[in-house]
Image (tube, rainbow, N blue to C red; front, side, top):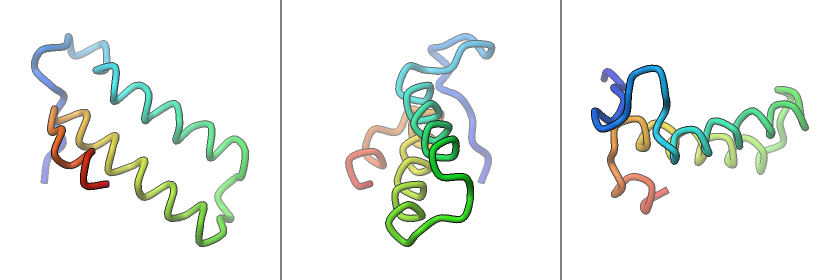
Length: 65
């Protein structure tokens, strides 16, 4: 499955939702490293799904996450 950015945004600028999810992922990794508890791993998985949905412009996946 290829993840493609939402075509309504220039390729060099992520969609706002994707940028927010990406920032949340960075904050999680900065705060915890990569040796995560089950809760932190689950949080990462949700954020990753949100980021992927945002890069494709798919709001249904964000709601399901």
